[in-house]
Length: 382
Image (cartoon, rainbow, N blue to C red; front, side, top):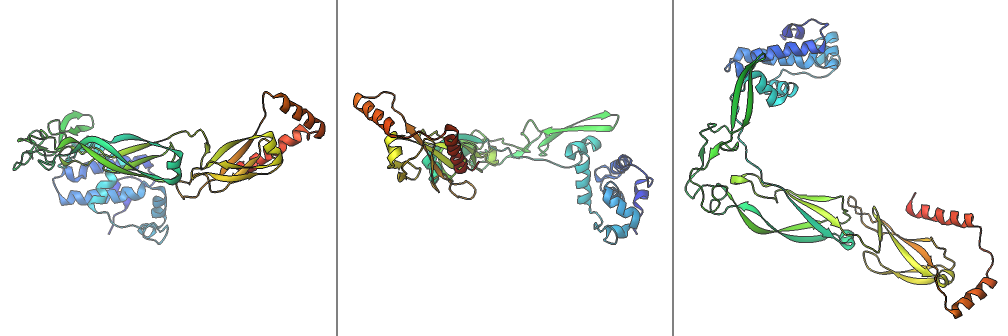
């Protein structure tokens, strides 16, 4: 039979959450397996205290337990579900709620856990310059890197052929060293990577002549990079494991590719959309005309209707840039800019004077401006 959880922790039913936590910590310190040399009775007490704490420190589980007892945890009341803890669950919960391994070592002075580590290779950052056409279609590039790679002579072990790394005499192969001191809370232990083996637990006594025991040599390599369509300067690519090799067969770092999209003087980019300013002469705007427009996919011909005003926007759908997520292309907006000559030849001046006598009064300025502004808002979806 499962004992009453309040009785297990030695607290009253009106105890606060902080009081429950303190009671559990006291019992956990007393019965933790690392302080009792594998004593099975202590281990059972530790699991029992952990079960009680798991329920009583959770307000919903505690309320259900108070009303229905164990039945409330098994589905009869609140229906939260409950099963007895195994040792790994109890240890995991304790380290989660009391600071992980750092808190665990501070309370208990360590245990017999070892923490060998392999040092990871460095990440490498490169910048890849792209044009607007590269963004539109995507591109494949190859870049040449000079970085650290696994030594072929020793296969990355750092040891001369036929030799093998031996255990570190400083840490005994654990990869870490511990320093203990007494405090009001008991024995406090600080844990750090072994300075002799850098946390690996082994040392090379007969180093490879090619890599001098590091397991790596600096060589050239070529890396292929696939850039998807639609990227921008805000994006970057991460190629896992394409960075520098780690010492003595440690995991390789990553290759981080920063994208530098060059400004294109022809276009103004607005997300997936592009804006192109089309300068037209007064006569072309008045009479209408055809123009060849550049796009990221090649030139296209558009027709400017007669009577086009400065600020008129023509839309070429799906001639913008693809969205990097779904591939849908934006639009290319052609913004008409009516060009007015600053100087007039006598013959041209005479024609304009004649024109001014024939043309009627222009529409009210505010009406014309509002019409152009509405067209701009419709074009850019604002």
